[in-house]
Length: 209
Image (tube, rainbow, N blue to C red):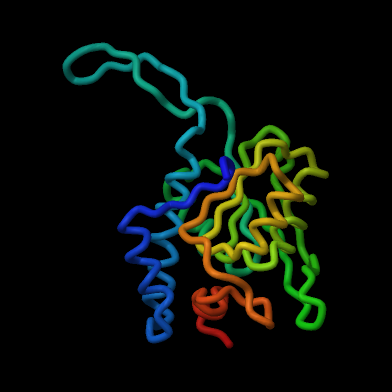
């Protein structure tokens, strides 16, 4: 479990409970997704590298840390991952944002790629793949496969909820990828939805059915 980080901070868990509630409306759900994503991103970036620079405070010269030259990339899996990317980009506005478009085939439950646009220097960046739900693991695995074929080597996966089945598959396929989530839920149901979950994250963020 060393590569799985469950963010069980009381603020995260409180907000997640409201997100789970079926009576929470689109506006509140979208705002909570933004807030929880920022808290998850904060933890996922805990170990990014810094370097000391010389500055002068109003009192005295000092050395103080800034982010090092290593660059960041936020890669949301469309469409629900967009809300997470927008939130985390508030913290790191210089990060490049790529996009990977996938949907789950309703019959096979397998991911189908329909779009991919990545920073041209993706191999030089710390990459954060973003998707609110890690259910079967298919989309996450396919997205990371694609990133690795483009040269990315330092990859983290950030989600709001994870199912044990998807978590196990992702760890098997990509044991080098660290995973950050607010909760590991009970299981997947017969339709491959996370139980108890929070429903379809994309539909609840964007108000669609």
